[in-house]
Image 1 (cartoon, rainbow, N blue to C red):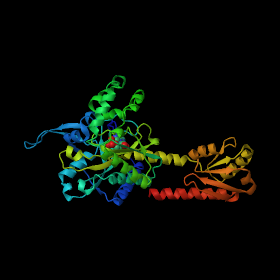
Image 2: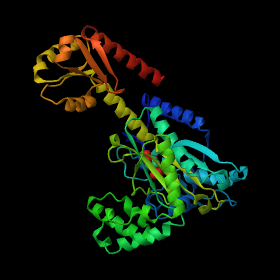
Image 3: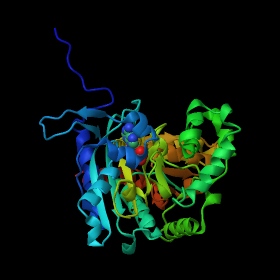
Image 4: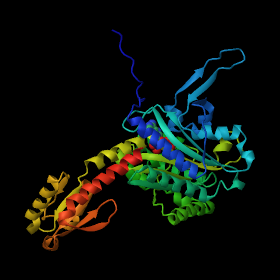
Length: 441
Ligand code: AMP
């Protein structure tokens, strides 16, 4: 019998019902992008290798070891043999198209989004594939159209926060940094090289290589033994010139005004060489080792690096595979949550709490029972992870027969007579189910 052919390592088939979730994510992204006035661009899946070598950077991991590159044979005398590459990312392709179609001549900002597969020969693991999908967007244009404004950075970040919220992704963190501009980076790189030189021999092989080729990437090293050294290296924030510092401060101020929470991460340098000034990542704890949901930044010199006019820009790419993983994990967690956690306030209320839990369970509810030995705060913390709401049972509640129910998703507390409690919780469950189904449709 012949051996069946399987999908190539690092690639996957997406089947129903999971594909419905992929479509829902794409539809939501399109809807949100449209509100911010973005239009769709579709660039070819393969490009000339030079585009990525010049755009992404020869020294990056992507270009130096992860690309699917081949020599494309000539089919006719008029054709030449060409080195072609399956796109490992889409920003370089978008900027190439921007230049090729002379979009700069419109004099306006171009706001373009894309959705599609990308290819990198990485070591496959959960959340990391060799064919993966990105949903990304770019804002690019001549400086006189405002493409360098920090408000563009903040707007893109605010859009991402809104998109994640609309997708129902909870618990993300926005990490933000500035890697400086073409004018202030060389001074920092010199300082960094100087600081690494005497300690490089104590660092991992990758850091030793990067110290020579791409010292910024040393900051990105995850090897535990190297962390102490890395923490002691000079910080890029201390080497930014006045203009870069003002730019970054303006991005932060606009985010604060729009109430988009962020944390500063002075080691966030990202794996692509084209970034200048603002760099960012949205991470999610539920993803494990591959915790970046999306990444991006400003690339003020990319267009010129690939032969175009001066066209500063900012963009991002969301890992769609990782969005799907996060939403699936959230749904699973949500499905496993109890309807209520009954928390006796003291040990004296333990027996009465068992009676209440029994009442609710007999009505068909999923109930967890705490212990009066816990402090109220501890009950709250534990219950928050396992149940949708908590019912505190103290002396007063037992005497009055009116119970306080705290809903963890809204933090709202409601007083409910004990006789109505089961019906109230069942109605809340039905309502939540209906809402979920509506969302899916
Ligand atoms: P990058 O293009 O490297 O800036 O990555 C942007 C986002 O794409 C990351 O934050 C990930 O969510 C996703 N991503 C990058 N590489 C992979 C991969 N090999 N497999 C799955 N997702 C990826």
